[in-house]
Image (cartoon, helix red, strand yellow):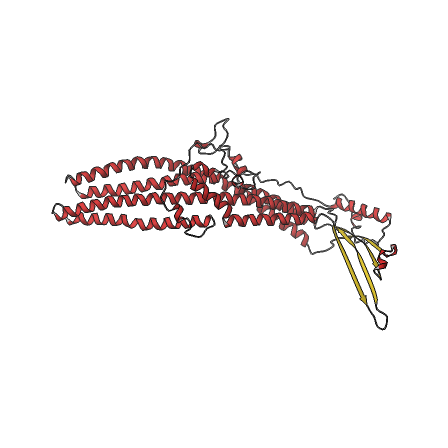
Length: 492
C-alpha cells in the first residue's frame, strides 16, 4: 500500500454525464492509477510444493545405463505382438464410456474458458423499437428508435484476467485427466485380456489333468475288480478326479466374466466378444528390454501429476480473483442511435442520440465476506498443493511396486517352470510303475496333484508377469507426454 488514507477516500461512485469534460476524464484516469496502487495482487507463479524424489529407482534391473535413452512407451501395447490386444485397446480408447465422458468434460472446460475470455472484451449490441401510445384525450403518438449499445468493464485489478487464467488451468487439467483416463483404460483392457488368456490356459491344464486322472481311475477300477488293489485306491482315484473336475466350472465362470468385462470396456454389450476371443490363445508376452527413465523424468510423463500441477495453478488464480474482488470496479458504457417520432425523421441529423457513462463501484462494508472468500480460496490452494504431493508420492510408489512385483514374479516363474517339468516327469514315472504294480496308488495320487498344482501356478504366474509389465507401463505414464492431447492420437 503506497497511498495515503486521503488518496483512498477518493474511491467513491462518480457517474459522469453524457458529455464528460476533459478535467473529469483526467480525474478518472488519476483515480484508476491511484487505486491500482492500492491493490496487493498475488503472483501467478504456481510454486509447486517440495516433494522428495529419489535420484534412482530402488530396483535397478530396468534402469537406463549412462548414455542410454529410456524406452519409448507410446502405444506400449504393441510390444506384446498380439493383434487382438491392439484391436481391443484401440477400440476401448474410441468407444469406452469413461473416455467419452472425459472428452465431454474437456469440451465443457474449453467452452467455459472461452466464456471467461469473452468477458475481457467489450459487449456491443444493436436494438430497434417502435412505440405507439395515447394518454387521456390526447392524440396518439408514435416513437421510433434504433442504435447501438456498448459496455466494457476495465480489468484494473486483474480479477477477470485471473478468472480466465483459472479456467485455462482447468482446461489443461482436463486435457491431462483425459490422458490419465486413456492410460488407465488401456492398462485395464490389457490386464483383463491377459487374465482371459491365463484363464484359458489354466482351463486347458485342468482338462488335460482330468483326462489323465480319468485314465488312471479306469485302470484302478479294473485292478480293483481283479482284486489287485483295495477299494480304498478306487475311492481315492474318484475323489482326485472329482476335485479336478470341480475346478473347471470355477475357471469357466471367471472366463465368461472376463469376456463380459472386455466387452463393456470396449463399449459393447456383454457377450459380444465370445466369437472372437472364445478360442484359446497363449498369454501375450512382451520383451524384457525395458530401460526406465529417472524418477523425475517419469513424473513429468505421468498425466495425473500434470493434472495435479494444473489444479494448483487454477487454485492460485482463484485466490488472485478473490483478492481483486475486494477493490473497486469500473465500467464504461455508451450508446449511439437514432430516435424520432416518424420513420422518415430517423434520417435527419437532429434525430441522432448519443450518450457516454463512466462509473466506479467501491465495496465499503460487506461484513468481511470478501476477505473470507480470499481465505477460502487460499485453503483450496493449500488443498491442491497437498493433493499434488500425494499424487507424486503415489506415482513413485506405483513404479516401485510394479518393479518389485515384476522382478519377484519373473524369479517365481523360472522356479515354477523347473518344478513343473520335474512334476511331469514324476507323474509319468509314477503311473508307469503303478501300472506295473511296483508302487501303491498313493504315490500316483500325490504325483498327479503336484503336477496339476505346479502347471496351474506356472500359467497363473506367466499371466502375472505380463500383467506386471502392463502396470509398469501405466506407472511410467503409459507413453503420454505433456504435449499430447491423447495417448491414442497416433492411432486415430
